[in-house]
Length: 284
Image (cartoon, rainbow, N blue to C red; front, side, top):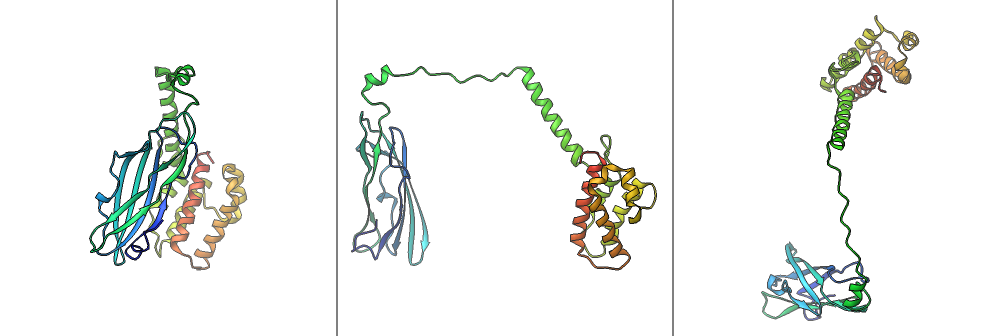
């Protein structure tokens, strides 16, 4: 898998990737080999050194050839991809091979070549026997089932699509387009999303959420009144712990003059407010 000893210093086959499967290969299958060759200057691998597309040897035809090069140290690295297709016809399994190749490099004063070894695989016939055996065992072709393109399936599909889109709008929209939309927490969530995450925004962000609680409760809501609030509005009961945590955090920041990362605080309030909005719409 490398150049001859005389050429090793100038050109080397550094990688050779053959097909992963070497058994059960039948007529029409396409097999690929990938090579990586490194050549030192002034030697180069010209495209003319590669096998010709359409060339056929022992039932194996070259289907495609590609060559890519890039600078590598004091020379070039070449990536070669060779695609072969099997055209052999045999009524018995037999060993076949992707042909060996010798790639001649150009540009130097002395000839340099890289040898690619053959790769052997097992060819499997589609049927055991000759053409008469194949004909006698041929099965009739089945046409694929047709899809019903009538109006009823189309109408059902459109109805499901519209229902899904309506659900997405109902869950994610902020404005009052449908019942239970645009409530107090939906309005607060819209304001929080527009609030810049910067120093000095903490009090304003907390205020938006407090105003929403106050509108829902009907008057100013404090932490000691959370039990009464949840009893009156049981749709928020699943968030009782998070609501209590919000009021504790608010008291620490507003009354005890605590410090908080504005960006993190606003993000937390947005998440809480969105969940409260979902409860407000009775979808949580």
